[in-house]
Length: 118
Image (tube, rainbow, N blue to C red; front, side, top):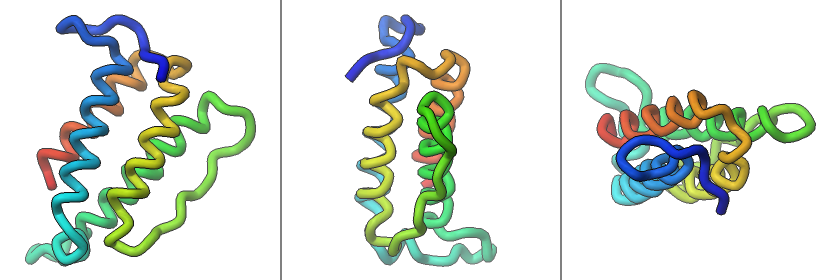
């Protein structure tokens, strides 16, 4: 897959994004369906819902550099969250070299933040 513009610490922007998305996929897979679907004590969103929202963000970013409109990502069962994230991550990484560097940096930051939050 193509990588983005040179970034900090000897990595490329696309390479940093790939690392963070891989880490996030592994984290989501490790949670398992019960933890993905559990409603937090404070009544906030489940982890699966938060992951789905991020997956939609990845799809929107990929669509921004592709012809045609953005598409709605279907909300699958909680146990499919990691697989859906992995697929959309690959789709985004395939076009990451065409995204503006600030967008790649923001997606990288958001992926790392979500991983820490889960």
